[in-house]
Image 1 (cartoon, helix red, strand yellow):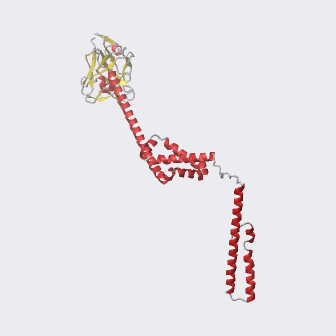
Image 2 (spheres, helix red, strand yellow; image 1 turned 60 degrees about the vertical axis):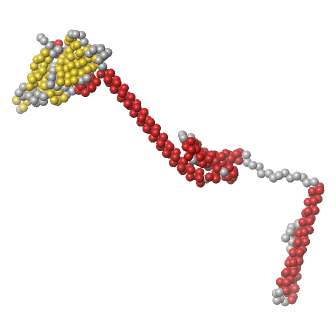
Image 3 (cartoon, one colour; image 1 turned 45 degrees about the vertical axis):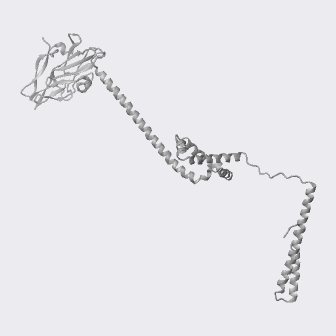
Length: 396
């Protein structure tokens, strides 16, 4: 019996009847119905038939270094019965090809995914530009390319088990595998190229994002440093006297306790934090050198205070030279001279005070006896002034 494949023509009900036309495989061939591979000549061409029963049909191993063109042609049908009031049975029929199912008037317009190769639907292959897809809906014929594989791949034509549990099938799809000439571009080649281009794009995109992230971080850090420098510039201006070396000495001497217990830690922490920031010292030296001088001056104050604590100054007067006999006599003469001058000045002062006191009493209208008594007391009191201190050479 010649190899044939069933095709369809529309009947009056809008469905299509299966007809016979020549092809490399036929659903009526028992070997084809069982899914057996039928070699065909010349070598490198073979056909198989896939029935819509959900069973996998495995291909023989394909040359991994070559490319094959797959041609699918033919149609098949789903048959089932619908019942009304149990007694009225209505036969139903739905015709399909490898990619579409027919509508009520026989147009193949509704796509389906019942045919698959190694779990990948025919739609996926025909959407893949690298597989050189080709379709002729009018002839129920579809083509695409695959790369050879030593692993046996399978073809499967399923049916709607859930919606039509009692469905019957009719017909099968014929699939022809043709070995293409050597050097034919492999779909995997295009896929690898696209993958490489995608990987390169992803690397460039990741590198661009990394650069943008670094630039953003650098900008934020520079802005933070500039804001910090602006605040430190104000403090350095307020404490400009810290740069004076003499002030540093005096400050360290008068604030030893505070520097040791508090300021040393605070100043050191701030100094280390700023100086260890990347780019801070360079930026400060370029824009605000007075900030660097101010920070260094506080470090120097701490250093001076620590030196003073470690070796406090010993306050000792100059060592007295031993006097000789002549110098001792000169000192005694000088002392006596001072005492004599002191006594003379004291006597003159007492006399002056007596005269003034008597004159004051004479101007006051008093009884002569009272006045005389007061004069006597005044004379005695003035004469007693400084007598005890005078013995020790004390002046008035």
